[in-house]
Length: 277
Image (cartoon, rainbow, N blue to C red):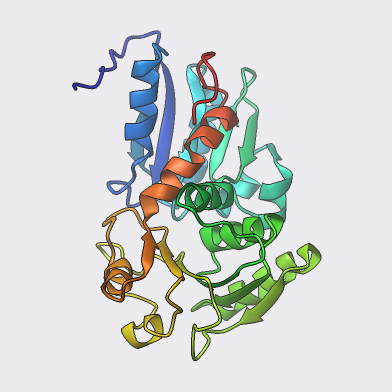
């Protein structure tokens, strides 16, 4: 069935999806389909914004009265914390922002949806984090959000590996008040874990490969799930290795879908027809 289209006029309200690179993002497809299906006169536009151009972009959004805000991906999530006027408690704890709402007076309010999105997606695929143990590659903005929300949802233990030791140590400190058990470094065996998660850029088209080796994936127990936050390609080398070993997998689209409703509400652009999820 053909999807309804969007007709953009001078009255159309605009949201953006920013990052660099930007071609891999899926959010504009979901947002624009939702707007069209619900008769909402809005459009999401992907925009390649460099790190150097980010402050100028934020200033432009403040002055754009027909803009409702924007969603951000790499590499902007940390920098946005200092460029907005107010942030949610989650964004403050994680020191990163991936969605910014523009209020009518130009005030910018930031939030962080990556963690909720990842675990909403995982739960939709049958994985309940409560009482579980995970090994997480990546302690940047997305990895930190995934670990923080894992702890909030009752996770038991997270082993964190990062190529940036300072980021891993900082994440351990952020997680300390949650009570979740934290270890640093890649375990020699993954036989004690229920899930392995890639929250690094390794596996993207411009950074092929896998942080987890085939021999390490082979140590996961038969019930374990392997999840990747990458959306392009959606089937990464890591997921291919896991599937080849007969393990369950969750790809990056699950995270995108899992945070969609959250983002609509954060931007205050949901239709009045009920829960967008």
